[in-house]
Amino acid sequence: MSGRSKGCTIYVGNLDERVSDRVLYDILIQAGRVVDLHIPRDKESGKPKGFAFAEYESEEIANYAVKLFSGLVNLHKRTLKFAVSGQDKPSPVSNAITSSSRFPTYPENHLEGLFNNPTSMVATGAVIG
Image 1 (cartoon, rainbow, N blue to C red):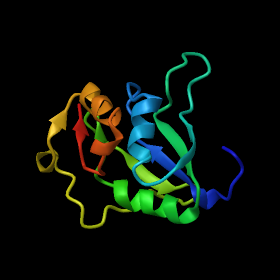
Image 2: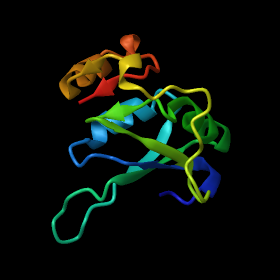
Image 3: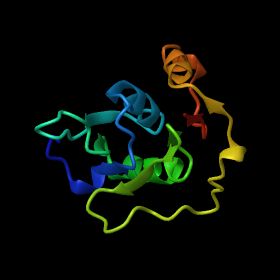
């Protein structure tokens, strides 16, 4: 991470190892400019550890991202967890229904196609799986 204040960095948890940097970045950029994205990997196996850190330009954008995405982003049948880095627990889902029946399910490559056309991007609760 680039050394900005901790309040600019968010934690993203419950990541499936199949989630690519590109897919995660394309989701996170919907809240604001992502300055840095890091998905830690196991030193021996090279597999992702199941979480990531994303740094935004400001604390306000980071807080907005956590509120925007919490309880709404599902990738590979996993609901991602979001919190401002340094806080003890991911933010609770407020007024969000996390039932998979609320959102349609799409294959991962469907979303990648959407992100290739920036004019079609909107913050939705798409489910990948």
